[in-house]
Amino acid sequence: MSNQFTDEHWMAQALQLARRGLYSTAPNPRVGCVFVKQNELVTSGWHEYSGGPHAEINAINTAQIETGCDIYITLEPCSHQGKTPPCIDALIALQPERVIVAMQDTNSLVAGEGIEKLHLANINVVCGVLETQARELNCGFVSRFERQRPFVRLKMATSLDGKTALNNGDSQWITGEAARHDVQFLRARSSAILTTAATVLSDDPSLNLRLSAADLEQNIAVRQPVRVVVDSSLRLSGKEKIFKQGGSVWIYTLCDDPSKHQALELAGADITLLDKGGSKQIDLEQMMQHLASREINEVHTECGQSLAGALLQEKLVDELVIYIAPVLLGSRARGAFDLGELTQMKSRIGCKINQIRNIGDDLRITLTPEQN
Ligand SMILES: NC(=O)c1ccc[n+]([C@@H]2O[C@H](COP(=O)([O-])OP(=O)(O)OC[C@H]3O[C@@H](n4cnc5c(N)ncnc54)[C@H](OP(=O)(O)O)[C@@H]3O)[C@@H](O)[C@H]2O)c1
Image (tube, rainbow, N blue to C red; front, side, top):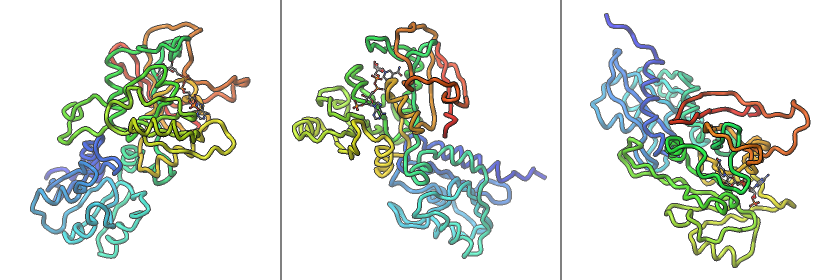
């Protein structure tokens, strides 16, 4: 007799499928699904792109399905009419034996309603199998609905002595080609790339995605993340490279000068004038909430030491990704995080190391700031 596979085994397969939507489903969640009967896989599917069929429907459409299956889904099935009809009715019609979900949907339009409908249809429901992995995979989607702000990832390229630019502002390039290629995958999974006018004026970066659909192992066109710039006094002119790459540029500002607005809007920028609230700087929390309201799930940040320090101090960094090059830039070069002057060790910001990897000649360290 063959071994009976566990719920975790099948859910791991569903998660593997969900990961295939890593670069393409935003603002929707990445979702995978497998149908199992008598310990055998019947069919499977994943959500490929926003507006396309959900994972469950893709699975149903590719096989003849008998009643009495166990259906494993990485997210509670939807019960509302969105861009596509509710999946829950299609699942109930198949009279499954059990529906096993990794996590309840955090989207207030669903939140428990899909599970409730299954109960009402007398279908057994198991919730919470590999929930941690499912939440991690959809960290941005979960954050947007639970905290009303995106998941914020801060990437820094530093020398061995923790420097991010020379004193004269030159920072191209600290890390090698392999590390810069690796960063492209972090950009690809994000809804937005966040930077500052200071960094754009200093480096004139393109901040675009240069990977192909084949690089991302997907069949659909590559999605360019929105480029978001903090520019409180509208110092950008509209002539910088970020305006010449196609895709959207969103600027957050406190400046209401109509001529500056006009010049940047002509270059294609979408400008949001935030509330000054007596400050000369942008309220970063307010900006993040605004980004969440615009369906931004994951923010990938590439900036200098000032904004990096400010985001950390305001507890707005969920993940730090530091690429460390085996070079020394000396103590007169610029640091990575301007935290002002700390006078007591208890004020330091601790981090938990999640992963260390070699990328070409450089190291990549992924960390969670402990303050979160
Ligand atoms: N190695 C790397 O990974 C890396 C990556 C990017 C850039 N860089 C280098 O970093 C250098 C630029 O660094 P930088 O420190 O001058 O600039 P930055 O950190 O990129 O941006 C500074 C700007 O951020 C905004 N800001 C800072 N603190 C804030 C707060 N508390 N609240 C709201 N907004 C805040 C302000 O924008 P407003 O002035 O508009 O208010 C400020 O001018 C360049 O030389 C660039 O080459 C290095």
